Length: 167
Image (cartoon, rainbow, N blue to C red; front, side):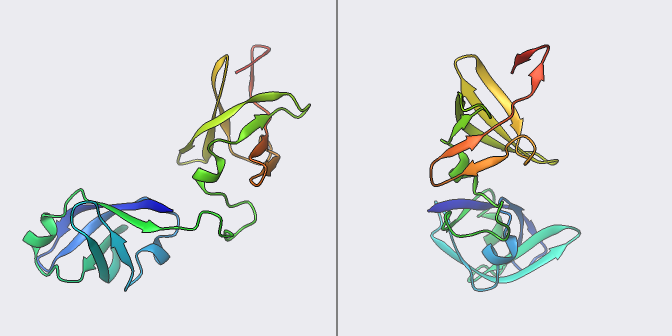
């Protein structure tokens, strides 16, 4: 599956390097030297240099050798093919696309809603579960999502209780 893993930012220096807005948890693999990244408007780009400067990823691409050439690619999205079903580093690693569309059930087995989105927040990921009553945000932690069965597209959730009602 083709996924957006980054966005080219502003040029850095005069040799054709660009800042990269990273949109993946596996930056070391996705942006490794020799990696081929697809773009919507400029074909494929091959990474020839990668380094971190002041906490910002800088990439150089084959055939891009000056500031003007990289500036022409500014805001271009970078894509790569990703196997979302490949095992993660931990058994609790899930891809956002594996979670979206799962049915959420309460501990007693009653259906609660459908996972409509996953918010990647600084503290933790948060599931957006939609049902007839609206949306409920549930932190994606084991205490509140004790069972995840990706093959069955089913989650068990313990939604927060606010003033005696589920939200």
